[in-house]
Image (cartoon, rainbow, N blue to C red):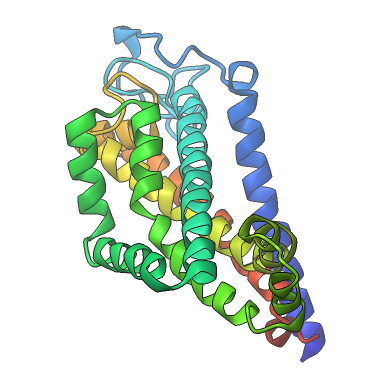
Length: 282
């Protein structure tokens, strides 16, 4: 049983980590890997299928879109925004939520009530609807997407870290540090953060996948970077209008999204099993 759990954990870490690393390297080296300029138009080869068809145009491995742009190149460049927004918005959420949860747990009283009741109120509001309203108000460039998605999910970290902080406050070393005059920042930095980091790592990894899906959904709805920006959401939106004429556009965009999100979730589950003694069999 332990060997099976160990194999499952290693398999998830290897497969999920491999997909994530491959996606990150693809995004970084997109100018080198992409065979075409993602914005180069050639109406003479518009809506041509890829390698699977005898009508394929040489050089366009996954076919072309409505403007004759190479689909593979646009998908490669599209990974850049998805990963950038997903990771950056996750980091912003984690920073805000972790600080809020630790402060609420250490201070208690009115500070705790104000922070946690505000978090509860925001959690009652659907996060995707909140993101749509905020993006519609401030615009859909990359910076705004990061800010909007980051602000929309900080409450998850706040509630988890608040509970852990309250539990850690009962530990002798934390009580001793407080009794000997340790300030909140010292207690947070030396005793609280090292204990909550494993949980935060797992939570942050899993949330990257959610952020990528939300960014894709906003772009699909026309609230992300405006066309002709090479984003997976834009490609999916363009392909959805030509599902019967050129189904490969939406299919490959959807496959790229599914593969990256699945890889991130696999990595997150592997990390969860690694850090949890009950799941890892330690």
